[in-house]
Length: 248
Ligand SMILES: [Fe+2]
Ligand SMILES: [Fe+2]
Image (cartoon, rainbow, N blue to C red; front, top):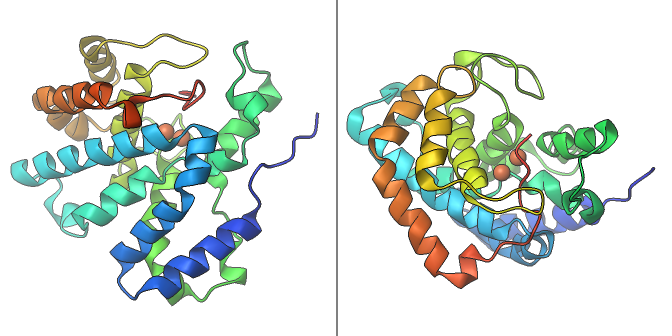
């Protein structure tokens, strides 16, 4: 079956232009870009997931900074920009047809590949329309979108990167992404409790996840739990479209 994307790349190009023209500060440009996409994210059911991963990333960033984990790489991050970039990690799903995202039954291989392609959303098309310096505000966003399904042991994708070959921002995004996916209900699965999600993440340390990031996550898991609980109380952000995020 041939699926048509719901959102065209032309629409994204217009949104990027609006963000670039809004001001010269990359963080504000990124904020504007996310704001412009809110309606589309809501329609596709990825808005709550975006906002929650954004919050979880700020917690992870703060605690990694506090404990001096990967200090050289961490010093390159700007907290708010990193968190906003994580909020946009699943932007590629705006092209995934709803009938696949909403499907309750087991996905076919073809459908799985269509979903997996959300990590390749940014590949090779932006530079036809923009100069590299105009796209500076999206650099970290693209990096995270491309690397958040890579796994520490090299069995993830799309590139099969291993260990520190995976950008740190992507390794951090993977932990907060999976934590949110596990603790959220989807059409095809129930949700894990916070404790069960922590156990799963701990068990996959060193295979799926960077052990140093997991150590910080587990050490501070009560902070993530508090944020998770406050999202549950906030209908605006806890409301899940049924399909939000398949863990593939
Ligand atoms: Fe994803
Ligand atoms: Fe995600």
